[in-house]
Length: 218
Image (cartoon, rainbow, N blue to C red; front, side, top):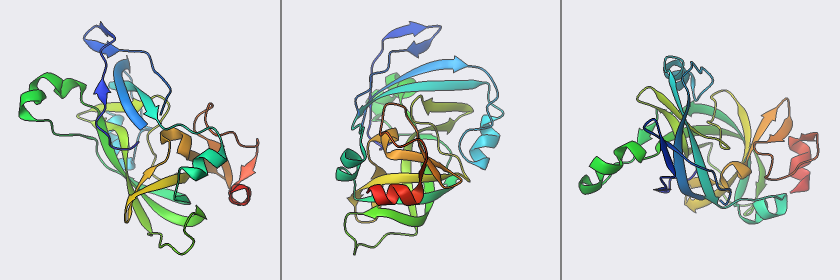
């Protein structure tokens, strides 16, 4: 979910849309775009982005190779500076990175879409530096979003939803600025105080794990 400019790998062209095979390794190195459906989908992004998505007939599924991927809480904790219980308060409209003029004509259709996600911190689950300040609000960059009437989403890194609660393991990249550790392996759903993993092949948790129990495990 970190905003690293990915290399695109053209595997197969089908009907003018790029098809590819996902590789599970970790930090965003490879994104392959694939048109998967033409249907209304009101479940994407924020209330604002959802209203746009519900009017689109195209959804693009992206596959990513992650340069970081964690399968245990120990690995995830060692790679992070902070873990928080947070509420998603806003998901901005999708955007593309500007390309150098000499490249833009050829790559504009293969440039991934990004969106800015704002979360408010409800509580600190774990912190490497117990005396460090934790901001009330953190803004993150996610690969994917609703752009120009099309919804873009990485298959194993679903778009954040406004109004949902999540546990995030974060790495500080500079004072006050963070990214999610290990992409979707560092994100967890929270419903009724129960924590669930985003991906099946990431960190394994007991079948029923509360936020308090997760804190104790760390």
